[in-house]
Picture 1 (cartoon, rainbow, N blue to C red):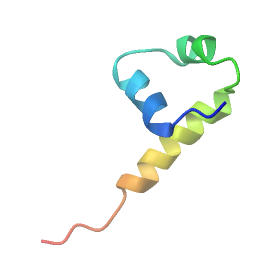
Picture 2: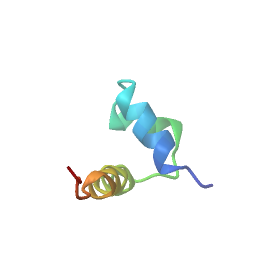
Picture 3: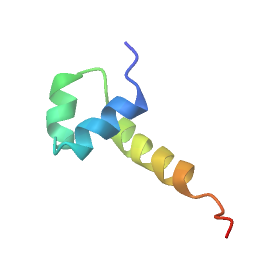
Picture 4: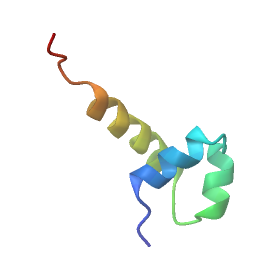
Amino acid sequence: MRIRVKDVLDMLAEGASPQEILGDFPDLEPEDIRACIAYAARYMDHPVLV
């Protein structure tokens, strides 16, 4: 089963706890949720041109 990073981030943004997400998607591991957050942080870390 594939779960998109966006879906995990959306659930976190809506207030779902990691435990709730893991309960909804038993194939996920806690490390997967941390990896989603790390991916988003790296994606948003880009130079800003002024």
